[in-house]
Image (cartoon, rainbow, N blue to C red; front, top):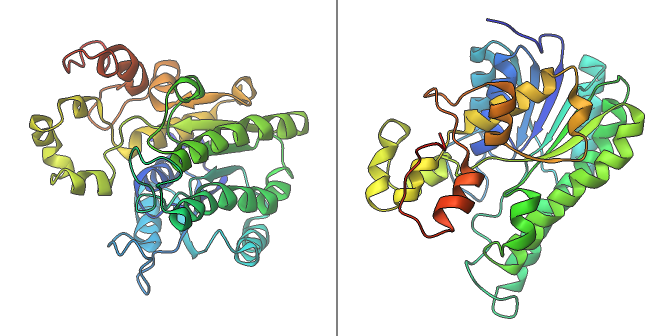
Length: 304
């Protein structure tokens, strides 16, 4: 198997589950050394109280062909993030890929709840987790990333810039968080581009994360059983799909062409030729606009 990232070092902040785990594993499959961080460990669960841990993710990275290193980190704590980056600098002397995937907001936002009705404490905590963590991590990690030319920063969000600019996303706090991350990538592009690095915003489509599968009471091997309840779930994708998008970006010698852009897994699959685990190429955001939002019956023909 080709390992174009064999000598590269990556940090996936928020790699316990979901997109973060999928990205870490695919970076490992491409040969990278991947530091995976989060607050859920085998010794201590986070408030999510779920079984996934960063140690599990690190093991999957190593099994995929890379080297996974789990480092428990609360990215709201600048001291912990600084210690993390110092460790990477001491052990590796470089950082080539930074993925800001910290989120933690699933239990903090209410669907279609206006700001005056939304729980204020939860809304503000969501913003801290989804926005402040990214800023803290970039502040401490980017000087290391800039030591070598060609570095990549990926700001993970939900929705493309085009889609989110004209669509209300669930609630005031959720909408603001996702828009902020998109703007972070744009701003970082201006700051990193002249210094030899690239920043992008990246969104998966409808993600078959561990939590999403649980919500639909299905597993990855029988996920299509959920289509009886939610037919448009047919466009969904595994976390490994967006992971392959990040790995493709990191290996691209012409990476800078994407600087400051808002990208999606489905869009990049068309450019780089990778597929999801089942061999398909779901293009969820085009499907969302042209089929689901248009009120048409679920039909993924031409979209995966």
